Image 1 (cartoon, rainbow, N blue to C red):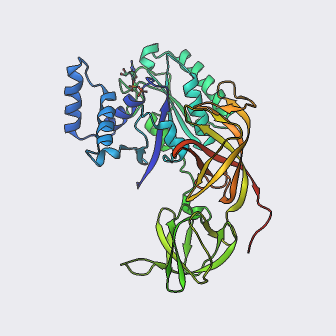
Image 2: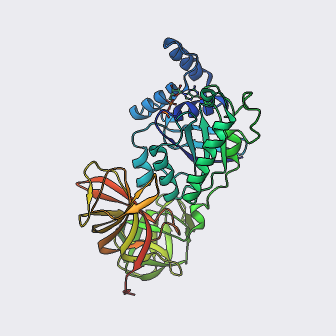
Image 3: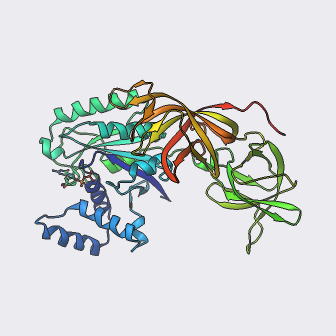
Length: 417
Ligand code: GDP
C-alpha cells in the first residue's frame, strides 16, 4: 500500500452529514484510538445519544485551531488500496476560501447529499467549484437513507438528477452510493437495509479512483522567492511547484526569457545535490550571471511558462464587498505580485441553471468569467495544462478577496532574450 496520502475533500450542504460521515469513516476503518472512542461515547451519552460522530470532528477542529495536537491536523483513514487524508474538516467556514485560493489541493471529493433534502444551491455551487478546479474524481454519498426508509425509488431519482447535473459540467461521478453515516451502512460495512444495491461501499468506491498525474510529471515550474549573490554567481531560491531539475539542465527565466544552465544545487550543510523535484525547496546556482528577481519563474528552455499580462480567468469572489468591473487590485501568482485591472466581467455564472450573463459587478460567493490585465507581464500557465501554476488570487486592502484559475492567456508580443 502506498504511504502517500490521497487528499480528499468532503463537500456538501451544511447538515447533510459531512462530519458524521468522516467520523464514521475514521471509526469503521480503525483510525481512532480506543481512548478517543471512549471519550466520544461519554460525550455523546451526556447529550442522551449513543455515538454522535459529528462531535468527533468538532473536537478535532477545536484542537487544531488551538494548536493542542499536531496529530489532529492529520485526519486520515485507510482503505484497502491506500491512505486518505481528509483535507478540510467539514463545516469549516474557510472551506470555500481554501479551495479557491489553492490552500487545499484535493485529489478527489466525496459529495455528501441528504437523501431527504436533495440537491440544493449550495451543493450545486460546491460541485461547480470542483469541476472548475479540476477535481474530477467525485464519489457521491447519498446520506441519511434511513430517513427515507431506504427507498430505492428515491435513491434512483436522486442519482439520475445528480448524474445529469455532474455531466452537464463535464464531471462523471464514479459511483453514487446510498448510505447512512449515522448507522454505518454502506460506508465501510455493507448495509442490511439496501438489498437492492449491488454497487460498492463508499470506501470501495474511493479505492477505485485513479490518482491524478503527480506534479513531478509536469514541466518544471520554480517560482523564484529570493535571489542571493555568491561570489560572481547568483543563487535563485524557491520551492519547485511542478516538474524536476538536474545539474546541466538548460533553464529559462520568465518573464524576460533569459537562459542559463544549472551549475549546482546548493545544499547548505549537506552533501551537494544533483537533482530536485516538485515539493522541494532548492537553491539553484546558474552558470551565467543573468539578472533574476523574485516573482520570476524558472522553467525548462523547451517548455517555459507563457508570458502574458492579459488573461481570461474563472473567478470566485469571496469578499462581502462586491467586485466592480474596472476595479484595480493586487494580483498574486506564485511569488509574483502586480497591480491588475478587472477589464471585464464577461459573464456571471448561475450555478443552478448553468446559464451566464454579463454583469458590472460580482457578489460574494459568485463565479464569473472575467478578463484581467496585469500592469507587468507574468509567467503563467493555463489551468488545464498546469493546475498548480494556472491559478492565482486577488488582494484588496491586504486581504485575499478572490481566487481564479487561468482559462486563456494572450501571450505577450516580445521576448527580451
Ligand atoms: P454537516 O453539517 O454536513 O457536517 O452535518 P453533520 O454531520 O453535523 O450532521 C447533521 C445532522 O444529521 C446530525 O444531527 C447528524 O446526527 C445527522 N445525521 C448525519 N448522518 C445521518 C444519517 O445517516 N442518518 C440520520 N438519520 N441522521 C444523520
